[in-house]
Length: 119
Image 1 (tube, helix red, strand yellow):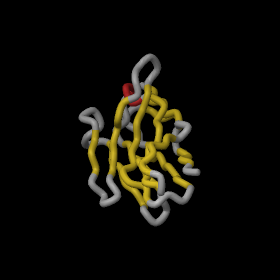
Image 2 (cartoon, rainbow, N blue to C red; image 1 turned 90 degrees about the vertical axis):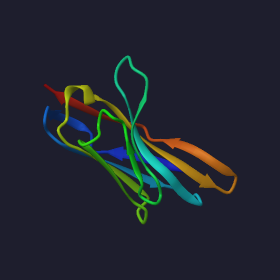
Image 3 (cartoon, rainbow, N blue to C red; image 1 turned 45 degrees about the horizontal axis):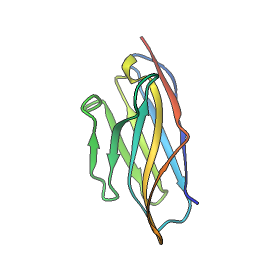
């Protein structure tokens, strides 16, 4: 059973930084693309950043130049360094993993971690 557990959220002032971590557990064949999504109150969940198993990263335009995604394949972990935070970054942030198993591909989500940016 694959589980994703996020940590690192909290309250920060505008212009500040936070680093989110996501630890993945379980024994799939591989954790393929991993990523971060966010959902603000009253809005749909949106992609923030993804990173392939080979390390290729992709970002939403709204976070380019401010956020950096990374992963540690040995630890099955993915991270999101968030700098120059803005009030519009306030949301619940969810870790996501595209997992390859013996029965096929599955998508897994973490429980979410709240990030609140005060202006």
